[in-house]
Length: 202
Length: 148
Image 1 (cartoon, rainbow over the protein chains, first blue to last red):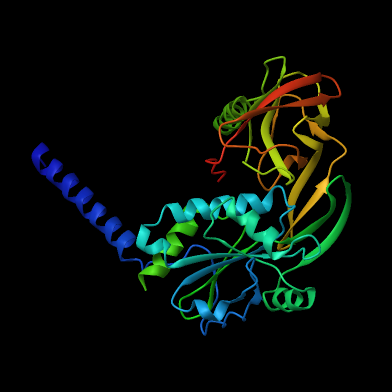
Image 2: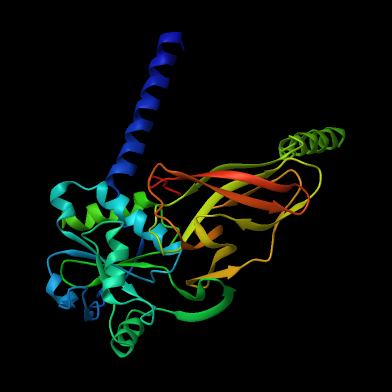
């Protein structure tokens, strides 16, 4: 075998390998990176709570939009601001048209300290378009239960008073009002952006 | 057989060389201190990396700052599917190692901010260590940190 034949042989082998890899990578159907709910998708339970201006917020009125729901509290120094800052950053990666079709909702797990005004003021720091919600304990308990939110008041002898340990996931509700994805606290921001773009394409 | 013994010996020496990436500066350093923007009256958190380059373990005992009514050592951690936060009496800093204070982990909780923390501004925290004594750390307020 002469040198030329050998080179052509190696060259074609590498070319075919590259084609194979490309087919494998690009032919794979696009899939979500967060934890997905299986079909049939569960319908996201109604969230019917008070807004800072006294009006009612109803999740069911946001059909046609993608809604990200997070449960937290405004005295939370670490996990809640981190999540809000990440969601703000995630939205900044979307184009203007897509941003309009995404709503971020922050529901308190601490109604004793968080009035609707207080929650809205808190989320305004991150993005005034974010929706902050509170309400009566009875109304909230129903929402927490329906979204499987764990919530525990802990006395850590902190100068901040009590601490609320809580589920730190972000739930994604699709345009049809179904629960589709749940993002854990350590989900990279890029993965949230990826899943939002994919969901908005549909 | 001889070949195998040599292989094992060489790999062992090579692996231990790789592992000995201990910090040996002889000093305890606090680096990359930052905090997120937050409002007066709210709680905030400060993050940094502590490199213990000395040959002895140390402990972070307390934090003090004049921009909040209290500064406490806390650890956020996942317990099952939820996040819990626990106040720490001290944080152990093993010799030659770096301990990271970051979102969802160790942090200095700034309780009741006495002023707004605005992007780009700085403030001071005094950290007290068991061995290294007191260290003043300049913390930069940043809203662009993506801690993935």
